[in-house]
Length: 195
Image 1 (cartoon, rainbow, N blue to C red):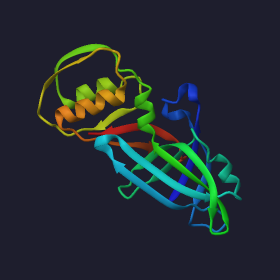
Image 2: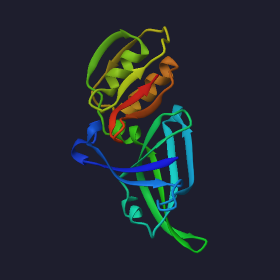
Image 3: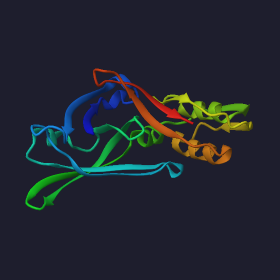
């Protein structure tokens, strides 16, 4: 597994094309900056999806392990996961100086900063209500399962997308899976949810 470290223009962080790879970490090459102690904790029904990893500080790539940068990797389901680094600590691991980064799935920050537009949607299904909440977030629905239930939905225009989506997930009994698509040039080409 390799990790890519990315940066994004904060003014346009919602656009997939604004992410830029600034470093690559790998345990497959002796010349590469290694990473270790990586752990992912996921409980998406509570919007809890974190990732932690460590790198030796004496590699140039460690300079890019800073809060607000991103880490991207392909997981065991062959999906690319994008996490925003929220905290970095320096310490010793044996006799090696390391940086340990703590990150959360990038969708969390994006949805917290997105206000759901005011609307009365009437009677809609889960994907339609979810899609309305994603407006202006930079995320889209890629695949969805039919839940079959229709419900009235009204949004007042004063709720962030994370809060609204948590509510409709509970209301419809829906589950989410957030990931990004990459092209062969290591560029993010879309940020998606499967429902």
